[in-house]
Length: 137
Image 1 (cartoon, rainbow, N blue to C red):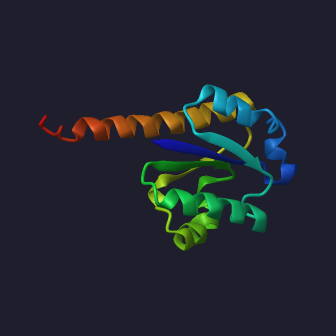
Image 2 (cartoon, one colour; image 1 turned 120 degrees about the vertical axis):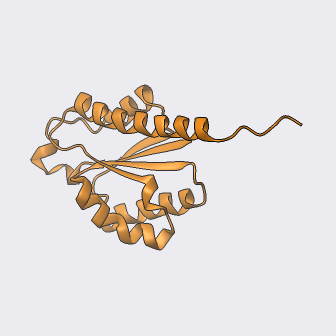
């Protein structure tokens, strides 16, 4: 399983991100969580951000083991903002996990992301356990 973390800080102008240090957060995420990578874009819902998200989704669409966790504004808003990108790229919406990271410092953001990562890993383990084991040849 590959888990990629996309982070947005709403151009750095939104007061709800004032306690987060987006310069150090990607390193913290990659150091503390079992993820492939993390990165920050100043406005994922803007034109450039949408292009980045589309590139990542297009590549990930072909791999059913790749999940994207987006840490940004309200989860419902993220689904609405990226629904068109998901349809356009063929990325399965069930593998897009939006997390609201507003109003938190880095530790709070890490806790929210950790919860999402652990839930995905547990889901994967449960699926493995439920799969019948092929007999040895």
